[in-house]
Amino acid sequence: MTEAPPVKARGLVKRYDEVVAVDHIDLNVQVGDVYGFLGPNGAGKTTTLRMALGLIMPTEGTVELFGRDPLREGARALEGVAGFVEAPRFYPYLTGRKNLELLAALDGDGANERIDEVLQIVELSPRGGHRVGGYSHGMRQRLGIAAALLRKPRLLILDEPATGLDPAGMRDMRLLIRRLADEGITVLLSSHQLPEVQELCDRVAIVDRGRVVYEGALADLRRQGGAGYRLRSTDDTRALAIARAQAGVEHVIGTPPTPHGLSFQADEQHVGALSLALGAAGVGILALTPELATLEDLFFRLTETNGAAGSEQAGADGREDPTERLAQAS
Amino acid sequence: MSSVAASPAVPAPGGAGGLSFKRPSTLTAYRWELRKLISQKRTYMGLGLAVILPIVFVVFQNVHQRHDHGGNNPFARQITQSGLATPVLMLLFLSVFMLPLIAALVAGDIVAAEDGNGTLKTILTRSVDRGQVFAAKALAAVTYATIAVFLSAAVATVGGVASWGFNQITTYSGTVVSAPEGLLLVFAANACYLIPLLTVASIGVLLSTVTRNSAAAVVGTVGIVILLFIVGQIPGLEGIKPYLLTEQFENWHGLLRTPTDWAPIWHSLWLCALYAVPALFAGYLVFLRRDVAGG
Ligand SMILES: Nc1ncnc2c1ncn2[C@@H]1O[C@H](COP(=O)(O)OP(=O)(O)OP(=O)(O)O)[C@@H](O)[C@H]1O
Ligand SMILES: [Mg+2]
Image (cartoon, rainbow over all chains, first blue to last red; front, side):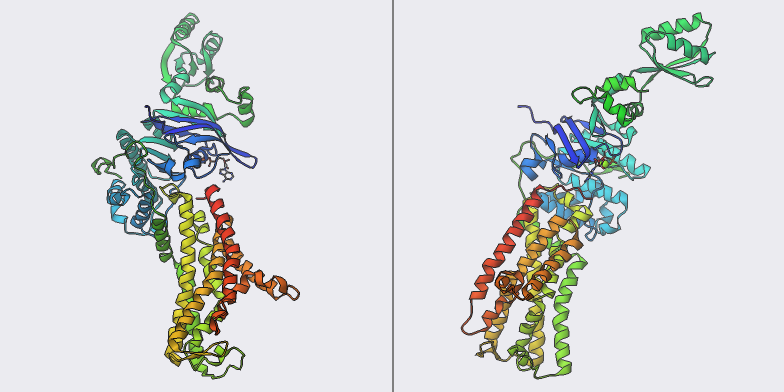
């Protein structure tokens, strides 16, 4: 028997009056994934995660955690699941440790015995006896992680856990997530930190205005983004004209005269043809270097189109083809 | 977390399958609700009022040393003859507005405050069901109101007895009862008063759940009490008077008669159930289905 996937969302919709916060989102998080959930502000990430945790009710669609729907099964659906959406919140008038004791009591299952351990993991042991009201933002964020770890989760849902952390805090958060993942915890991580996602995640979903514009392996996304090349020549103006005229060479960008030359996308065969064409025209090639699209490039290409263009691009079934959009952009 | 590598191992992920799932008891959730109350300043505001008002009353009476209040309340006339008249008078004074206010102060806050500061999402992502959290909160609100009533009664009794002695007392029907019996009656009267007061607390919990705003819920609850009280004073509306929640605040008077008049107590019991049960049930349903989007 194969185990139900940690997160499976189908056709999730959340409407607030006329605002469609989440618009038919499907998600598939597999066991062992460090799954990045990306999108610009207001894309619907937090709303989706709230529905996954059973905090808000979907207008349409379903979400299951390990095969259990939080809407129907309540707390039972959260078995083995922990995390937080937006900033983790605690009782400011209780100490960090008392907060954890309270949450452990609401977890049952001997969570109370793990308090020292989790405080140590997030390095809050010395401040555990202080009121949360006096904690810094970073300390609360770490207490949030500690509270999640109390549950011995198999799935950790984290909504921008590094928000507001200093560089060292961010690095530590990354290391901790990496370590948790290495120990077999599946992580669903919503993030704005593209380098963080690039470093941690193997699979991603990119959402924009409530819709998934890409879901799949990060490596596939980068491949789909197309192999890019950068060219510097003895005469960039002519090189630009030649490249634009060359079959199989696409997305040629460059505003010569520029010391940085131009960039374009093409497969190897067409790159070869272009270099011959440049030679024949007497344009010397100073540098011709392949560049793999960064997640940042892809993210902007997928999400930075205006609202009207976005809806025009939507297919007849209301879904967009991300490859099409990747190709159309830039 | 700067020395992550040196930190102890992360707790191993829980075992697969659902066999291990153990929901904590509602009693556990209730105990923590009480602990939260104990740790909050607001809690002591209400209890402080419940303690200070009887003290002020006793001190004031001691200073003035008036033997006859001239009123037609037999307990007011006996104030300096028996210390047990003090808790009865205090209940009479506080039952109309102060104790409902004290009950509303916590009941109106108990759900809404957690909505406002975002901790509701924290506790609702643990292993307790929403229904359990609601039950724990409603129980805590009711416990608080109960404590306020008996605390106030205890202070009034101690203050009264210390000032004017543990003496026999004459009830509404003119019967003289011994001091121990009088003490028992004081306790029973307060217990009867809990019937309408806990109903007020239930309404507070409902408003707290629905409005998601502590101030609105507290003011709303007190507003309902005041409104019903005013309705009870309108001439021509005598017919509906027995069905007003605020009229039940006097249900305990029947106890201070010989023979005991149980009718108003039974009446308040079913009537208050008609207010409290739908309020709690509606609050429960709203709490089960509502979006927790705060924080
Ligand atoms: N409770 C609510 N009432 C009304 N609108 C809401 C509510 N919650 C979210 N929205 C709207 O839904 C959309 C998605 O919000 P959401 O918080 O899910 O975005 P997000 O992707 O998490 O953004 P961010 O990166 O800024 O955290 C936004 O337009 C937001 O205004
Ligand atoms: Mg968000």
